[in-house]
Length: 140
Image (spheres, rainbow, N blue to C red):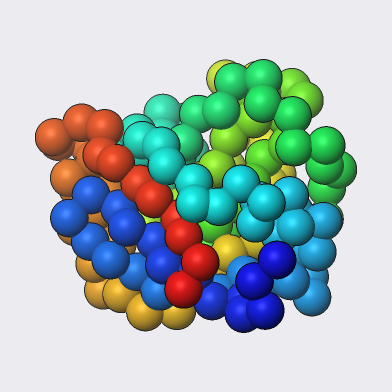
């Protein structure tokens, strides 16, 4: 396990620095850290507002709720452990109220972007207008 809570997030054409929220979401951080580097695709949210997400279907991280919220601030990254909707990773780039067609959801806030926040609106626009964009989470 890396000693540092720092990570790099490559999303579309942008590079972000981030920090694991280890003190507030230790189980979520440990489960995700074990999967690093993590590669997938970002798609735009359908119900929640200004955000992008990584659909993970029935992936089971073996998690319960911790440090969970329905209203992440821009740059906060949530892991929804599944339940009434599919498992997913959610990144807010603007105003967001986390929801699905089943209603309001809450996800575990486990990463905060610490550098590159000014690029979040452009990333969101790229995903909205150009389609799915690659994303990679890796230890810094």
